[in-house]
Image 1 (cartoon, one colour):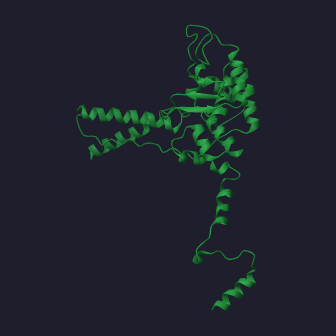
Image 2 (cartoon, helix red, strand yellow):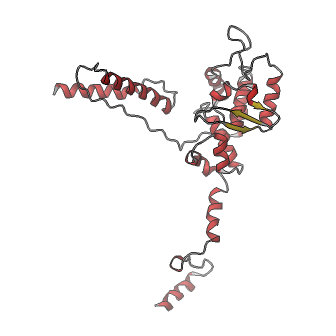
Image 3 (cartoon, helix red, strand yellow):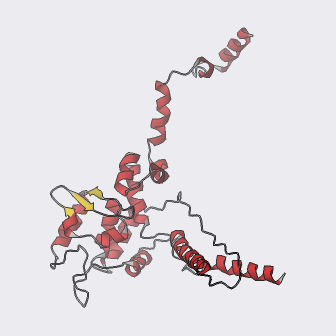
Length: 272
């Protein structure tokens, strides 16, 4: 009985470990912490460090990938206005994220030799999925790069530290300044990664094809991109129209929608 109580207490603490991650972090980051914790206990078990058998169960959170948070036009403008007065790099970082769909790490590590101005694309040799991507530049991205090019200081990075001991090195994070911009813009329930959702959502709402959005975001599977399908004004309408070109088998033919209910009833009685 004592062993069972002790084991239950151990499991309770293990499950609670996922809750010590700061609340503002995503489910994905919580799962990373839990996986590390689980790997540590597996290693201890292999090394024979445990003096007794303890059933260890680390429960992984299941993220809801269907939740999409994107900004309205007014919210986006308020965010840009707030960011402009906080750090020199914050507004252009946000604009690149919203107009390319690139992740924060890819943007902060962006180098000038990855910005092919002649071809009009940003080329990243390696992304989160370990695949190369080529993101087309729109007018907003080109304008941002034009302004940033005016303040180049010889660093290979688009967003380098301007002075200090890390001068020339890439800026590592914008978490605090981004949080300040959100507060000043009065925007709630929004993360930097949601700028990626903004890019995909705005593309879909303006008639982009699902597969095009998949390629821009660098999704390996169309399943990840399908979360944005409902935002397309023509996506489901176009799919339903496919039935107009289909000749259904006799057993599955639809009743003529132009016939009235009384005519349909009379036709059914005559068949009997």
